[in-house]
Image (cartoon, rainbow, N blue to C red; front, side, top):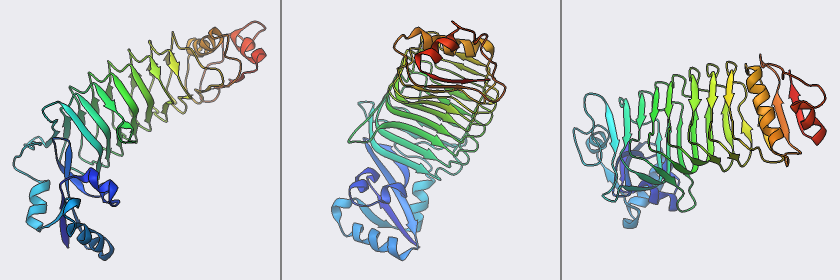
Length: 330
């Protein structure tokens, strides 16, 4: 078995594909250090070539150095104590320029991952952290795109994750994506106002989603296959630049979109839910309220969704059909 260390995982994106397989163990001052082990000849050939290149930041290390990196007793940039906590520290400016930070099958034994920065430039990709129970970013206000990489925070396939807490996050220049986290109960974004893409799907016991200050979604708002979710509350949402896809939420009863202005041609999908008649009527009313909404698709059928209170001439359903909008209901 061969063991390697990189002093800057992100720089490997310019040299090879190995930025995705090095395990991060320290983030500080804008660089992400990581380690990797392999007994695959093809990988060893590539990595040994990088070791020979001083500019790559890759070096050969011992097994004991590899283990010490992943299971430290203490160190700058992270802390790991009896609670299994791992902290990603910001540099003094409190801006963390990550470029890309991948945690794939990482952090064994870590139950809480904390980001201290107020701003992150780049993306965080956290997948398959089997012991992780909480992600906390108490100071984070902004996620920015950088060097062609979207400002993104992805958390997926984390079987123990119950809480995501970002109480100050206001602006995301990319995507928040939470997928297949089966015991997720809380996603806290009370200050979120603007985002390009929001996605919450296949979180099996997630109960409700409230984004009280969200006004603008530049692209897609997506929330599907969350069978226990009963409420979607977006009281400030005005604009969604692309599709609104909130389907296959079999318990979803209440949808609150009081100031939403659907764009002409939009795809709006709330099928296979349990929508109340008030929610169905509310979605149709918001579409009628925009006189320029004369094409597009609205799906409200399936599941136990209520029918509109009226489909008679002059009803909101009838007005939309007359405009040329495709509307399907129960």
